[in-house]
Length: 364
Ligand SMILES: *Cc1c(COP(=O)(O)O)cnc(C)c1O
Image 1 (cartoon, helix red, strand yellow):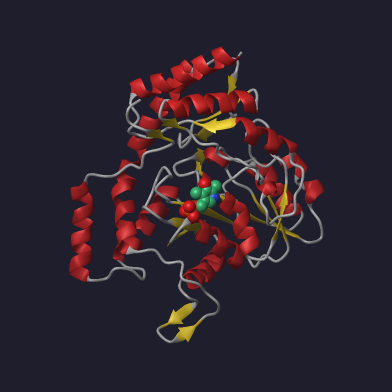
Image 2 (image 1 turned 45 degrees about the vertical axis):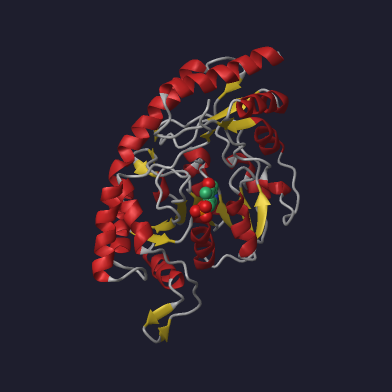
């Protein structure tokens, strides 16, 4: 490949569509602080997800931190070692302690059968990630949370457009957070959201997101600046109407990869039944780290840059207590996410697949 092919290429709407929103911003001179475009985006997202409350915030990490704060968690939070660093860093940043529960080798999500044995008297919540948009064992997690009086906060950063049993995946748990970063399927350049159906929690989140301000000169309590701007909302309003088309294009590319890469040396995570996938990532598992690294090097030599999502496993972060999570460690060592975007051409998918196949045959 002459052109470098990265893990993803951000979808950009026709520039005229964006400009028409920007003209409105110029007319109103309101650039931020819960302006009309932010409100419009939140309303449209509520409709899209079929949930009661959506708070558009500056990024997915801030969404997690505000959610932890709003749930008033102090103590241990059970979480997955196989996710983006923000899942763990948010817990530590909010002065809680992450306790890593190993993952299921099929879905790559927190293993629900290992949750109970990790619960202590200090456990306050479960914070799993629906990794690659694959639904966690939500029913089992809900039952455990109910039995042990724990809160559930889902890191739903990868789940835009995913439904499970006909419901938007972000509607599960006490609260879910999502990222709208430029590398994610639906994006607002930078951004994220906090989603809940709980009115009381929503009231708190609303204040917390905006400095804890109740009126022009009255404070509800402690808050932070979690706001996002009219410019970011405008991007979201341009991308949202295109989302089903973008998902369909990614589905086509994923199926093409499937057809080229159906060999014994490569396996895929398992997606639970009754899931409507969003094709936000194309993860593949090799038999060993060595094979994966050979493939990665060979692709890099050909100007193709997949990513090791997610490596290393989060229990190895320098600021957490190391815990053995052998499944997560094994998976993290041999997983690779291949380039996937709505711009990826069929011949590029074929090129990438052929480079992978030749690398595997040469090394075996
Ligand atoms: C991207 C991501 C985040 C962080 O979102 P930002 O918007 O980049 O702050 C958190 N969790 C997961 C699983 C992610 O992939």
